[in-house]
Image (cartoon, rainbow, N blue to C red; front, side, top):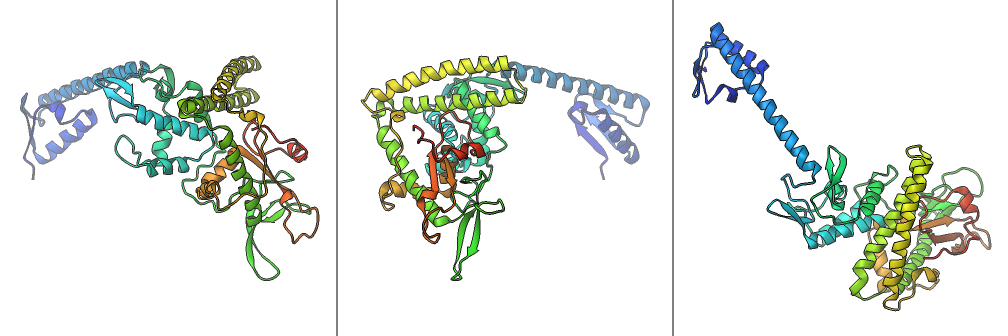
Length: 428
């Protein structure tokens, strides 16, 4: 049974007039007396006591709302200036007093994550890499999908300030990546067509990636052969004659050999000393970011979000930046006498040693990482068997080509596939 309530001040007992009325009713029903250290006894059984309590409650509510308004205005002022407002230290910076400075070790990880997204890596593969290397968040916890996504989407990565979800100007935080790179990655992560699976559920390398010659994306299916043996095939979902159905292990071997050859070739033509490797990777990331922004601008114009005049202006600005980056890349690559990669055509040797170190490096990658590499870097088209015995697999019916630079990512159209076989191999 409660007989007395002792508080420091009435505004510590409640801040809401509604709560006060409930309290008054409860005290009257149980004959409870209230004592405040600062103002003495409040007799809530009398009209004068109740009016005093109500006045104190109203003043307390006013002070609470006024204080909240002052705090909100101050936080808005700090946010609009891009200043540090407290809380957990953001990954990539240290805070010297109240001034953020770049932590070069963590910033290198941030740049790597941005470059990985631009190259088409999945969030899952980046999370695994960070955790395998023992890199933790600023709270000392392992990385997860949510933590990585939040880190990549922060405008302050590009030196931009944000308030209530909108970018309002420059930030006090020094930029770690350029605005072009940041906006390109944000566009990729916001793409509704991007796979968001948070687990390694994919079993087959090309399911949903390779296309039948009709244009449809193939699916994996289990079939039983004449001898009762069960095996998996890539099968076109369209009905009718002429659509493909190929044994997965045979198709995967052709594609794996082609990718391994491609990786060996691109590695051999892009090996330069470490004195400019970091800058070269940064330039490559900037170039990929500009290609993504160019594609996004075209989509916005098609959807009526921006006018054709605005599209032309944006395109011209991006083209100027692209020209500067291409000139710088030529300088970086030629500094060591290394041949430019765009002067070398891809070759797909039939004899690739699948037991070699280069092959194992590719084959030992998680399947979702290899799928992302193919999805974002290549087109794979499967054609029907056309010569000899249909029981003998024809490797020539599996065609893989690198995606053309600057082309919007995604499957080929039916019209593009019609000329896919006769087209010359694209430059790397």
